Amino acid sequence: MKNMASKKILADQDIEWLIGLQLRFGVVIASLIVLIGGLVYLTQSGTSAIPHYHSFIGTKAGLTTLGEIFKGVYTINAKGIIELGVVALIATPILRVAFSLVGFIIEKDKMYICITITVLAVMMVSIFGGSKI
Image (cartoon, rainbow, N blue to C red; front, top):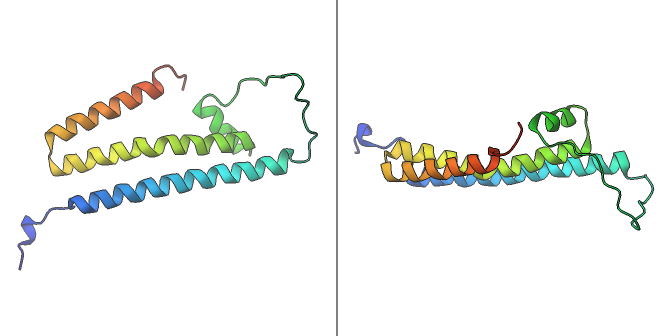
């Protein structure tokens, strides 16, 4: 019989399984949000006239911050819901790196902790470096 005190809290396979599960759920949830946004878009503007493609008419800038996206979701704006799905899809690999960091901290693997912190920092700087949240 094994000593319970010597047993690890989570084995490597458990952490890998949880990270894989998180990636699957992240992609599925983001896809469902985008699908719901697409259905709302079709119901809101599916009967409008076909636009004239002979000349380009730009639209105003919008939904560029998280606040605007959440406001769009709150007001049931289809583009806001679709943007929320894109944000969820972008957040999925970031959460994967964060969960990996937690796993390496549990394992007390100093080299991989440093590497994962560096990767997470590079991701955060590249995403939020020039944005206006």
